[in-house]
Length: 293
Image 1 (cartoon, rainbow, N blue to C red):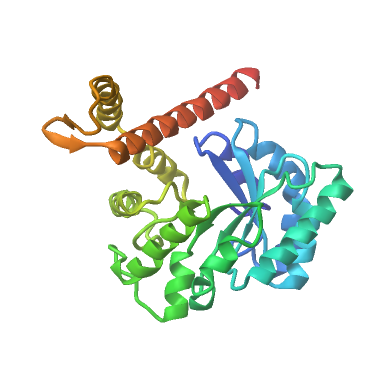
Image 2: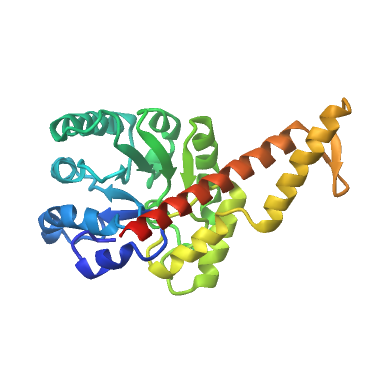
């Protein structure tokens, strides 16, 4: 959300989002960039009241990025989002700039994380180098609208015209132990929650772990879609129990609901259960923040 629009920022902590992005880039008109930077300290405090991670999206041009980082690298900020990344050298330079500002602010070096967005063909074709260019990087995404503009595509609700780019990004993320973030489908029609839900479901099915949203009503949809369902959790528990029984009997493979299961099946079940625990831990932290507020 635009960092300088107080009425949005003041309500952000009530929306239930895991992270809140204070935007200095596309959501802020060029003549209001300085105002948005000046608003960051109060915006960070307001948006973080319920325990959500606070992220700041900076601008791509270097002359703006320098000033953005001066304002954004501060206590209370979890990470910096880098838009339109096209080269690993850019990320390395930003890494050094962040480290310099961490020292100036008395922050622990390396404490500020980075999320990168590949939004052009040039950036996507250097995805492997970019993904491994800094230990700060935690998430990787591809901007749907910007990417479609670069490729001169008309987006459909299904988003299959970007399937290759979206699928490739998941592989790169997994290879570099990053969280892939994004949707598969058009995102501009924010009022149609059914279309939005389907886009999120397609992305989850492809391997994405979460996504950004541009309207508060979308938060609940993402929280639901990217969280394990009760049936998934029940099956995961069943797989783990059956695996323990099979191991005790000296078996490597076993059956769950008439389907063969083995080591990869167990690993997926354990990962799902770990993810569910992390989600619950975050909910508990938010509840504590709300109680203390």
